[in-house]
Length: 495
Image (cartoon, rainbow, N blue to C red; front, top):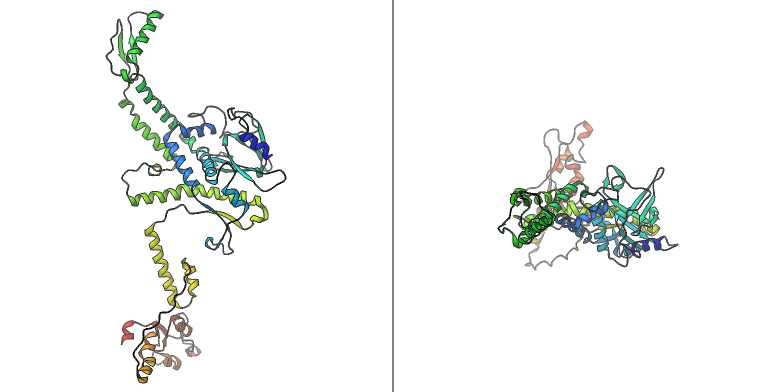
């Protein structure tokens, strides 16, 4: 099957038309008819790329941006978090994706299939295998106009038919084809192309360009009528036409004075200004960009732009245009291609490197916020430092050795004891117990009033949630404890 398919793809003539009978053709993607403009065929949609400059720029930019993104293979983590995954650097699926076939690397493969998708709403990958080997060995992007789904009343989809350039029809199984499509609300088997929504605009752009070309070729004037008082013989008619063309046709003869014998010139021209072709072609370009959701900046039309707005436009293009295309490819890789490798692909997944460019200001703000969050968690004394870093999204850091303290002057033993028992120890105590003193205060609470604690954890051990002394006996008499712990103020420490 693989040899037959590859022979049809590359070893046969490509000049034959693909308009041959097929078992099934959807109404939304009828592959017959003209080649451009009013033609709604997939072939006509693909030809439109080389006929309208704005469309070419859009498809070229989106397909290039999608193809340039790097891909990696990961083993999923039990936690389900992306940052805990392990990269897999050696696997048959990774080799296939990096080199789909011996004639094209991954970048060319992705660019080709993305052109098909952006123009027709569909992209088709053909999986090639050797006889008796289940593992995929090669992948090929093929033209959408040569692929036809074969519906099944019970199983929804029975398979596919590939029509070769010389008209041969080759049946393909479900595991030999991967289809990417933009969902079509009228046809579950085919994709929907943005080109279909702008066919009149594409025609307008082409006709405006041809009119402008004819304006310069045909005497730089759209035309007029020569009236003669009597009928001319064939010889006289041919002579008048030839003399007029020799003297006035072409850009070099534009605006020459016309001298007519026995005739009258009646002007029937419409000037370029009247036709407003510049505005017309500009409006057409706007409609094309509108269909694809592309801004002028995205295709290189820069007006009143600075560095900040350029970075914003680049980030917008990556987020709104490139990422959705990458997600569609990612789904095809993980849910259709990887399962073809059997048990060796269990727990693996492809993922792409984020195409969104970094924003220095946002990164600095996020780093500051994470550092502040880490400090706040560390001040509680309740959490392990490594767990704190992981929770706030900071990398693990090696703890630096404590710097050696400078040599201090030798103090007397009285000064040493006073320092240990006095101000130094007291200054390290950050929390203080505060009792509500009155006639109803129990003795344990009175005794613990003013007790100092080194950190919040120690204080909350005696006062859960910051209030209510655990040794209070007021509860025995139906009275709730009114004591609490508060963080000491610097002013009080200094006193």
